[in-house]
Image 1 (cartoon, rainbow, N blue to C red):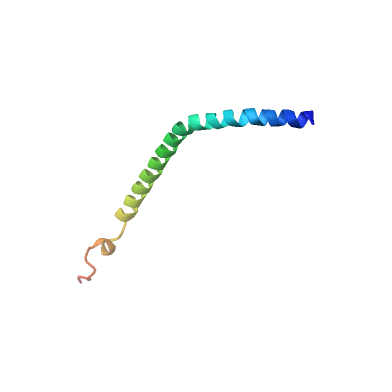
Image 2: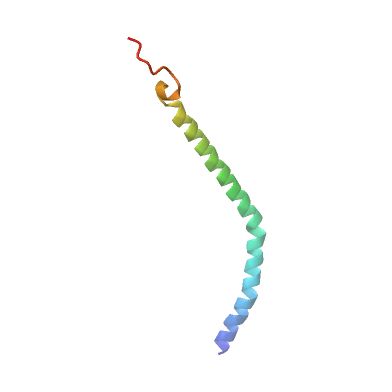
Amino acid sequence: MLFCMGMMVAYAIGVPNIGSLYRARYGFLMTLVALGMAGFFSLLKIRGASRYNSCPDEIVGGSVIDED
């Protein structure tokens, strides 16, 4: 019983402290998440642009009529 009470006291003291540490780091974590998302969307933009630039003329709007 003494062991269980000791663990309950450790849990009661530890959880609020760990929660406050998590909240203190939340702003920095969200900054990293935002930078990662910006990089990801930038990569999508670059890959999307290169995908459309490599299309044949018929798809982009060139002449589809054969001129023999």
